[in-house]
Amino acid sequence: MSLTDTLVELINIPSVTGNEEEIATALEFRLSGRRPTKRIGNALVVGEPSGKPLIAIYGHTDTVPVQDNATASVREGTVHGLGASDMKAGLAVMVHLLEDAAIAVGPYEVAGIFYDREEGPLDENGLEAVLDEVHWLSDAEFSVVLEPTDLHVEVGCNGAMNADVIFHGHAAHSARPWLGENAITKAGAWIAGMHERQPELFKTGGLEFREVFSVTTAEGGIAHNIIPARFVVNLNYRFPPTFDPDQAEERLRAVTAGADEVVITDRAPAGLIPEGNAHFERLEQLVGTTEAKQGWTDVARLSGRGIAAVNFGPGAVAQAHQATESVQVDHLDGAFGMMRRFLLP
Image (cartoon, rainbow, N blue to C red; front, side, top):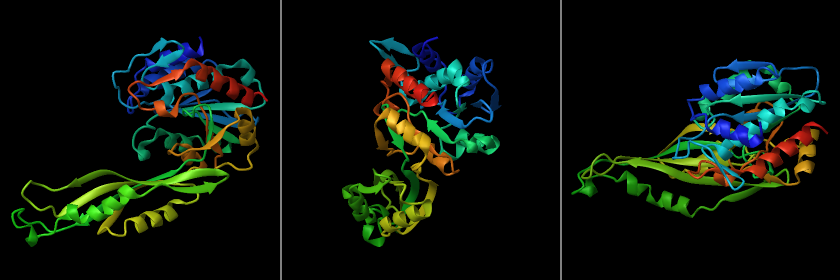
């Protein structure tokens, strides 16, 4: 079966977050005859320690909800369909690497980790349970997450934090607003400042990461004729690997100093750059282009456990979560070819 055929087959298996059982079973059925497999809920680990140096490859099986793109199609060298770039193209490459006979007898033990619930809430991500149960994955000399990267090596990643930024007022009849205090308009100056705020660049490991604060949701008021007594906005903060979560929280609290109350609702560490890792250097040289990862990926989850990891995979970053999502066939072939050369030096 070609890479394209495998990708079409994977796209045609529905796997919206929370509905990954069918795709996990299909992957288990295909790969269990070739390699040892371990099922952990709707996640699947393929491979086991063998005494050879371990390299692990990772991919999430879930997709965002359907946007009239559930069925795969192939047109003019491009595969269209839900998850084509994010990240069933990466899964197809993983499957073919794990089925490759030369890689199986090559210099490395290659383990594949297919996990669920990546597109959902951070604390429900299926990779956490896999890492808790399969302890030998922490022995990997290097790990690659095959998220779409436009065939560049993407290194590290920004951390992520969300906070409820709360402004308190005092309710009153809207005909007599001077008897109360409007929590929404009280927040106006702060929100205007956030609108004007520009990303700040931070350089680490020779790469530039952008620190970004974004207001993403707002909630306040209970009726058209009542001055609102409470207004809550969500502040989404993406912070560079130069800050740990505690330092990042300090920066967020400084930015929100004008609010009455700030409640951190979640936070995830940044992904670290695996400087000095020989496998990372080999992959860099092979691919030829290295960039900072602006978004959050599970590289951060891996590096938080001391596992050296980067993102590298087929597909376009800009295609992720699009209703017209697609991936070029030559991206599939290119990612597979580079990873095969990396695993068979």
